[in-house]
Amino acid sequence: MKKVNIMFEKQISRFVFVGVLNTIVGVGAYFILLDLNMYYLLASLLSHMIGVTNSFIWNKKWTFKSKGNPRKEGLKFISVYGLTFLINLSLLALLVEKFMFNPKIAGVFALGICAMISFFGHKYWSFRL
Image 1 (cartoon, one colour):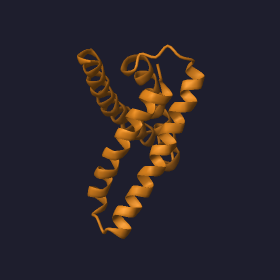
Image 2: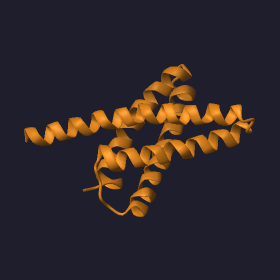
Image 3: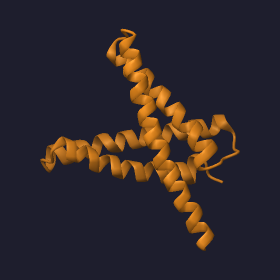
Image 4: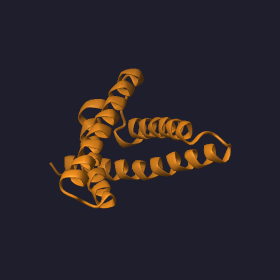
């Protein structure tokens, strides 16, 4: 049982590290694309795609050490991202519009909830061993 807990804790730590790395890559790509005079919405879309690809590779190879079919896992990975994005938007709207939270505080709260959903979605569905 202790070995399972250590592996679980290691995966969570790696997932958080990949999340931080992914943020740096995504924001960095966005800034670089803007510096290349790309339209900001296109830069946002492309940097998000770069970030998701970066996250997929690191989580597949390092966090969860999956040897499964990359195409199948990639589709599952993107669907988890899509679901957490919709949950994030819904939580933000609920917290800001109905409960009058400050949007920054609501964003941090929603991010925490979505990060947990994302971890378990990827662990038990995208990269299920």
